[in-house]
Length: 83
Image (tube, rainbow, N blue to C red; front, side, top):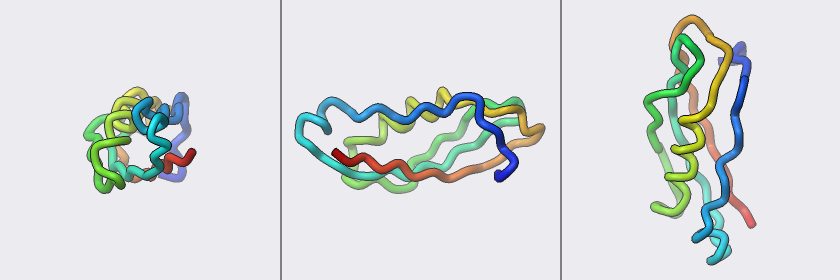
């Protein structure tokens, strides 16, 4: 995983409803970088609070691209949302 080179890994946007209520939280996801560098198998491992930030994280991570590692690599990443 340390040798993975990123091509595009934008940060998830702050959901409008969370910003309106000035909510903060975090989401931890596990995902697989495929042999060609795309992302698949995104799984939310933890979300606090539940139901507020997961969609933003899942949709964004699904667009991430890495240089092709040649074999699948599983990663875990935590995103913190703070106002």
